[in-house]
Image (cartoon, rainbow, N blue to C red; front, top):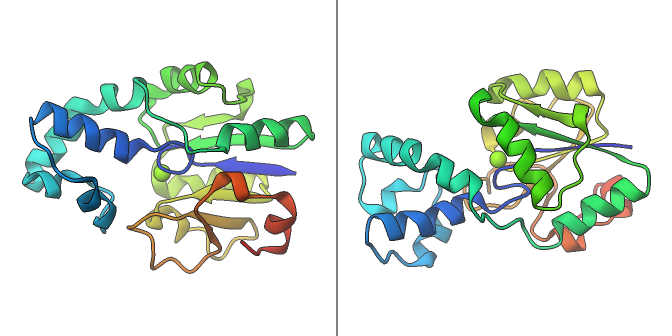
Length: 191
Ligand SMILES: [Mg+2]
């Protein structure tokens, strides 16, 4: 079967990694509980930054956030390797900007993700992901972002939400822990 995955905050804990970098760079000690309560993807508000300052901060920190030691979510690499060994196809579909695509692919490989050359899609807009997902005829797709998931509700692909504080309103099967995901559960749509 064909599996598609968003990367940031679906496979890897990017925002939280960014949160720790912000605390360091801004010399603040914002508590992690504040982060867990956020209802937005953007994290700047808990650091007292305006939207404009937050945008600049994210832009200036992006390479550090992307390409240092952002941790994958627990169990996810094992699961993807298992699926690959069982003969399933794994596709990565990320809206990271074109300038970061090659380095992102290499980062995934360096961090133990199974990546086949032509199974890595990068540099599209959020709303363009749906087209790629349809063309690839994916059986399953995983994402965290409401704006993306909302474009997929009418499609035949079975979508799953990686549980996050900002996507609680999305009415799709959701899960918290990759290590508890099993193919049988996905096929039955029960998580
Ligand atoms: Mg994401």
